[in-house]
Image 1 (tube, one colour):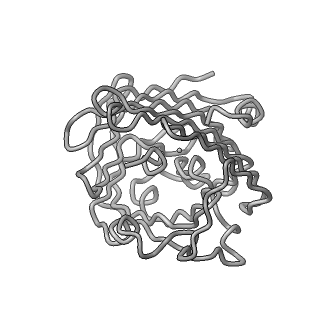
Image 2: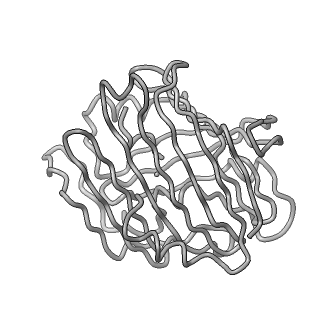
Amino acid sequence: MTLRSMGAGLGLAAAAAAGLGCAAARADNLHATYRVSLVGLPIGTANLDANLSPTSYAIRADAKLTGLARLFANARGASTGAGAIVDGHVSPANFATTAASSQMTRTIRMALAGNAVTGVDIAPPFEDKPDRVPLGPRDEQNVVDPVGAAVIPAPASGAMTPEQACNRKIPIFDGYTRFDIDLTYVGERTAKAKGYNGPVAVCAARYVPISGHSPDRPTTKFMAENKDLEVWLAPIEADRVWAPFRVSVRTMIGTTVLEAQEFRVKAE
């Protein structure tokens, strides 16, 4: 498991100051802290701070391994992203992420407009591998970045329903690879954390690689066939968005769970 896969999936980098400035004058602040566990054992923590409004978002997130996990992989990472919410979908403006280990630190910065990538900088660049599926001519269009993918907008009017939250395809480009996350409605639960006690939409998730990946890698094959992915989304009704409360992913070494210990929304 890497911080990149924790997805969160997910740089306190140069885009932070400009990104946070994109938030609307009237906004709510979401502060969430997550416990990361592997087969039930705590291995890390993650934090998310988001400025949200019905028409914009700006997010900062970080994650690190803790405890005994640091003996095997002293890894940490941080990400930022900001953009608009237009007609019930996310339209990112910028994304930045930094992942660091004891061997290397890599930073990816990406600019977008109209859901199309306008520039990418990766330092140091990834090694180009001959088995990598090349990016297609449209793989950097009609996409969101990994941070923007964490914002699930509801329609501009009407009730916010868990079915609407889950039943969607999220097209993601992370600066190097293009993939879809397909969400399907499973049900609704009640979830509790510091600052939150309420409903969550439960979505089954599937990872669908498109390009930029190495199809013969065991991890790629495993994740493409993996049916044990689940996402819980909590509603933030004032801003008509859903945000991740819990993510569960079966990996090749066991099930990894990221679950909110604090999930607090405060009006600004």
